[in-house]
Image (cartoon, one colour):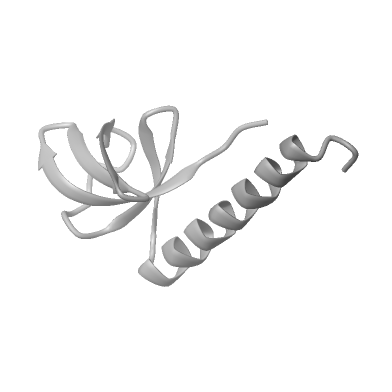
Length: 81
């Protein structure tokens, strides 16, 4: 299973950027989205920004990921699930 996360672009230098992902700053490649700007949101997979997304979709995606992780952790604590 592949998993993408949402990040907000905070800095850009050449084909690399710093993205804030759920409170954590990570360096990512923006080679696949060369027109992205600081302040915009992107879907990130394997260290690459793969698709620009709007702020509303970014927040909804992040909320869904948090909910998924919450349920996944509960399943680990209760293996009968």
